[in-house]
Length: 383
Image 1: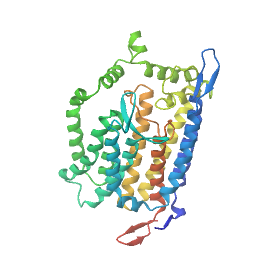
Image 2: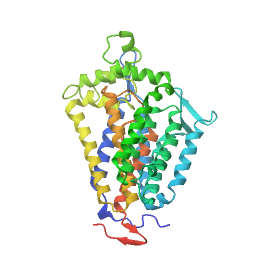
Image 3: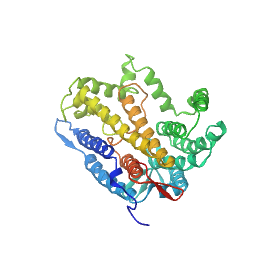
Image 4: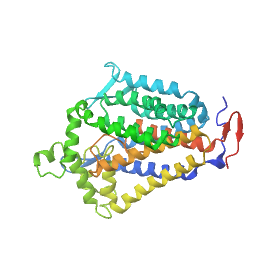
């Protein structure tokens, strides 16, 4: 196998790399800011989380180069093997001697000094499996043809929900809908599946863990004046909204956010990093971050539009749907528009598994943009 064979730099989507790089740098800056901890008498110190994030970023860049070295079509050939391996890793988290329990959840496997959140690998596995399966079928405009793609997604959804990680499990559904729609599914058939999901939604309440039900109820009651509820179940959301509100239009200044510096905002370098950005940079510059995400998604969409290879296009569409959904849910959670779930902000939240998944997704998009289309053994110009 020749590495970097077939890459054409003239096809490279430089805007995609540029916007992703800017988002990563902003994320590193605010992971550093959020790593500050105030001491009991006012003295402060920085944790090592920002250094670990920097190491993960370097590892992610190396991983991206490794993924770019091989034509994405090779990954498609092994898509079902990658998918199966990811499912096995998900199942291994449920084995007591293998899976790592943190906050009553089994989502990680220890590999010596590294800890892998297997659901992040599963995201890429599902996208590759769907991109491999969907173009191989002649017609997705029949209702029954959607059963297999939904089954591909349902398996990891059920396993991840049992970890329990309901937020991550639900992220697969927008990816599925986007990919099957681009593959040619009829909107009325997708609406039928959506309607079936709505009908089954009340059943979800009975399989949810008590803390998950409480999160939903707390979201509904977030405007309550009950001090006990505000300091207990609503504490995370209350502090996040306080941080965003204190930032005002122009922010309190980088590294000067009171909710951040005084340890009031929990999980501020992971799930609630957007609240730190809002507090320290203010409404207008936080909006600028959202605009950067929009520009990144548009540049990725341009890659999908220019790609004439159906599997390649589906890979890009799936990754766009994944990143966009996580961004919308994370920012909606921080601002109180959605219930609190543990979903990272792409390229910004602290976490090695999440950052490596982001680099993998970015690498696949760049891989698709730089490889010429080969159909039936012949290269075809797609300019």
